Image (cartoon, one colour):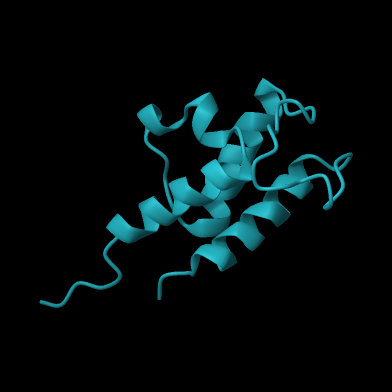
Length: 92
């Protein structure tokens, strides 16, 4: 079953807060630049790995772009798009 946009956003929000413990939940708005909140390149790679684990997706090299992970809104949209192309079941 594919997760709703809101479910993806909430789960992404939690994953970001795990990576960035000095950021409060209130600061983490949909359109806030995560890099302006202190996300650095090392934490960004941890974020990518944790999001892949949390959602069971694999980001292609071309998708691992700063802009895709700059805001919670961008992350949510990327994951939603990834889930839409993953087949949920294959019947033979």
